[in-house]
Length: 101
Image 1 (cartoon, helix red, strand yellow):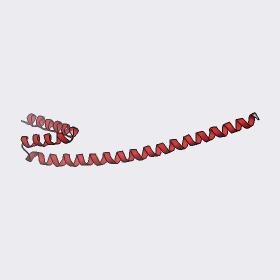
Image 2 (cartoon, helix red, strand yellow):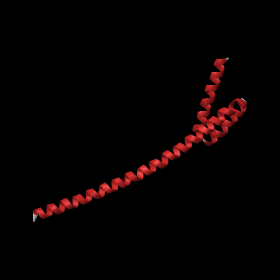
Image 3 (tube, rainbow, N blue to C red):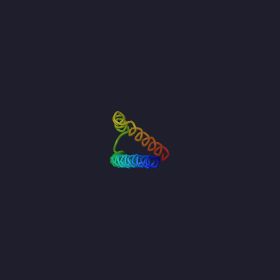
Image 4 (spheres, one colour):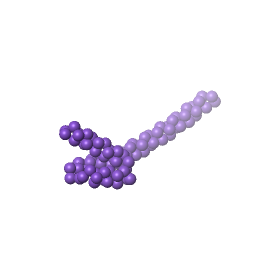
């Protein structure tokens, strides 16, 4: 009788492990799909940021300092990080211009 209980216990243990393994694979699949969506979203955001930066750099020589400050102020209401990036970019451009003089 004892070997029968041992066999049933091993069968039950095998089923539990199989279910846990399936759930782990299922969770992994869901995480990979979510990661794929996040990476695609990040790539779109980076592309938009690069397009904006290129357009801004092309437009920069035509803008007066006041217009640039108004532009940065308007952006800061929407996206603090982008404003910080533009602020740093402007600081570096001013520093480069002062060194060139």
